[in-house]
Amino acid sequence: MKKTVFILAGLFLFLPALSNAQVGITAVPFLQIEPDSRAAGMGNTGVAIADNASALFWNPAGLAFQQDQGNQASITHSNWLANFEVNDLFYDYIVGKYYIEGIGTIGAHLTYLNLGEQAQTSEDGPTVISRFNSYELALGVSYGFEITKNFAAGTSMRLIYSSLASGVSGPGISAQKVNPGSSVGMDLSFLYRSDPFTIGQNKAEFSFGTNLSNIGPGIQYTDNAQKDPLPTLLRFGWALDFDLDEDGTNRIKIANDISKVMARKDTTSDVAAGPIESIFKSWDSFQHNTGSGGFETVSLLEQFMVGAGAEYWYNNTFALRGGYYYEDPNNGDRQYITFGAGIRYDLLGVDFSYIKTLEEEHPLANTLRFSLLLNF
Image (cartoon, rainbow, N blue to C red; front, top):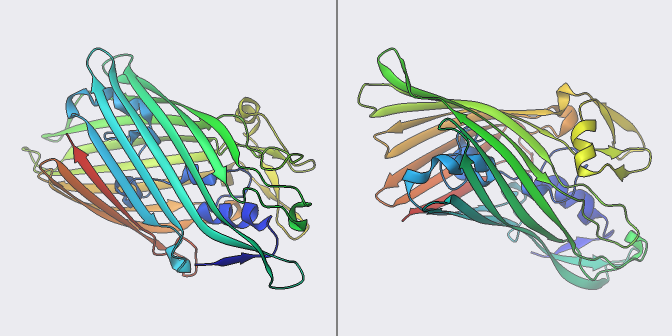
């Protein structure tokens, strides 16, 4: 599908905002899109679960506890913003983990968001000046290691590349040529898992995790533009896994994630703080531009995003999932219910998730994700 843009700056303001409804203070918000269908079906909870290859996104420390689970690869696909019926917007995530004797479990991932073909037109008419493709991608590696038998740490490094309007210039961006943006991001994570205990007569396990992701320098698209910060995100949460019967045929996991964007801009100068400085300066209220000439204050409490969900397993073969995700109306206003299911058979697994937004015309309404897992 061909899309026309009258002001090229719209690529920086509109499309990223749709990728993630969070207040638009960062570049490359595609890094915050939750990749795997399992966690997406549980209200975007995963930082304290992190028990498969998708731990690379949620909590790399989870790789440390997967020595006995074998190697795994997974791919997730979603037609992004399906409610807009734009056929060339899609999101793909490929991830794999591999255990190396004497070293531990390592992983690698590729994240790709295709924003389709755009058409630059003149300001005073429908004349097409040029056409260009927009996309963003990230390539990274991860490693988790045990500190004790119950406590692990992990880290990730990723290369980030964003090509929104490469090679295009025009009056909408002060006649400057737009270049691809690039950066490097790092994650730092921890995960605690308890020894098994009993609830009634049945086995249970508790875990708590935290991940500070995408720490790194900002991204710049034009020569004299200020750098936009990476979407540095602090995520922490807990999970409780317990059997419903003595033999573990029926099992339930409940989880809760809380997250907060740690990037910060000075609204008066539009200058982004450095990545480390932002981590310490983001614990108060801030003002963001409403786009209509005014500013709106976002309190600290309003900056937190909350996800909660549950997963039921029958005989480690069939799963049903559900959850709820909440973002304050003053800070993005993503509010939706999630559903999901999964099947495991031998070395193969399939998961899917569905978003039911509380607002009918929301860009994320009716988003479907499909994940295919292969154990080897």
